[in-house]
Image (cartoon, rainbow, N blue to C red; front, side, top):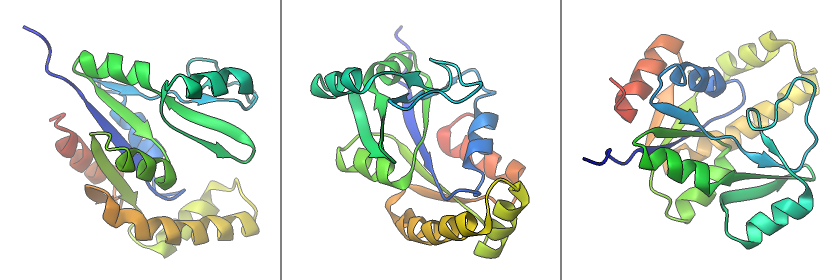
Length: 185
């Protein structure tokens, strides 16, 4: 008997909402595969080709676009990023959950294309908590934090386009809710 087809799960949310942490926790389940994006940007120190990203040239990227190999792609800060179709199709055919952590723009693009999946927006409990989380990271200067908070407000308005909004007021509670939504319980 063939395995039941898996599902694509798209997780988006503002910087500091906890989506990356939740994705890492979901990946502890062997039934979950993470989408590795292709990019034309140069690898950062410690990044591994095929694990963090598929690092390719702009020419290779454009050829993959021409062949329809991406389910979505965009240019961000002068570099191209995209989600390859084949790894997703392979995972889904094995009955796995294919997890994409992408921004609201990419999720909207997938929805507009009619890509079937479960779209989850991870939200902070409130914007003051989000501010504390971003400041607590100690990775960005104040002006970058303010830009991230402004962008978070814009992204938050987009939550109505998702199938579910999960408020990350507690990692364990939010993870449990997401696992139930995906059907991993």
